[in-house]
Structure formats: C-alpha cells, structure tokens
Amino acid sequence: MSEVTRNVDIEKLRELIGTEVQHDGRGYQIIEILEDGPALILQHHEQPTHIQADQHGEARRKVPKTITIQILDPDSGAYSQAFRRLNLNAFL
Image (tube, rainbow, N blue to C red; front, side):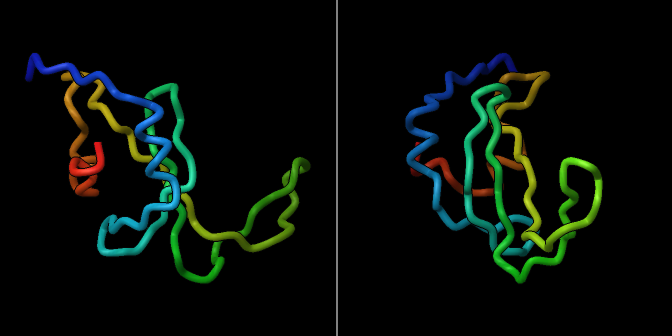
C-alpha cells in the first residue's frame, strides 16, 4: 500500500464540470462533483437509453447513463485507478 495521501481541492474539481472525458472507450461529460468521497459524476453522451423511475418506482422517461468515479482509493489515499485513467491530472 502506498503511504501517499492526496489533498483534493473541491473548488478546482468544480472547474472540471462540463469537461468531456473518455471512460471504458465511451464519451462522457463531468456533470457533478460529490464532496463526500470525493467523486465525479459522469453522464454518457449517447441517446438516453436507461429508463428512470419516478418517486413511486414507475418508469417514466429515458435518461442518459450516469456513473460515479471515486477520486481517491479508500485504502491508500492515492488517486484511484479509474480517476487516473480519465487523464485529468493536468487540470488539477
């Protein structure tokens, strides 16, 4: 395990909202930053294909897929592999 612990600047991360990234060979856009974690929320660029349920659990509309990428590895405190693969180090 690495002893490196990263201090994450949430304000600097917020500047990444709207940035286009590649994850697993697909195009995504950063749409939100979660302070608790911290994590990035990515939204897929393709046509809406996931059906979103309303508050009662009934399917109402199609929406783009979203995924959450943890910024830090919980065990080591270093940047997570998924975050490093986004190649955002130049922005931080």
